[in-house]
Image (cartoon, rainbow, N blue to C red; front, side):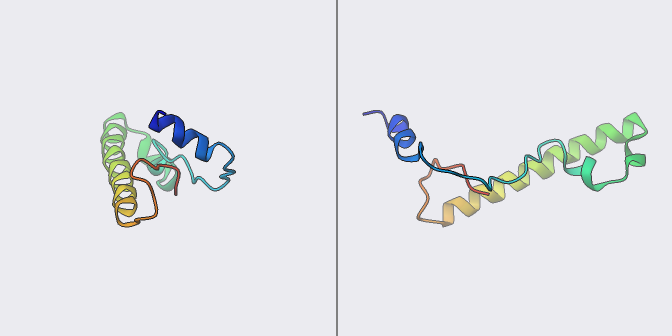
Length: 79
């Protein structure tokens, strides 16, 4: 049996309500003042920095997953 199919079989009845906030592209827009985004040059720089911050948050999630031995290595449904 296919490994991906087995994973689907084991998790098809899971009821996950707290999957977290989808913060991709919304980190700085929700935390900084809207006056910071008035200039296009500054807005583009902030968007580049935001992509880096998003990458770091996702990387921390991977570190968290690697130290928790109860998760499968391909499990990605935790907060």
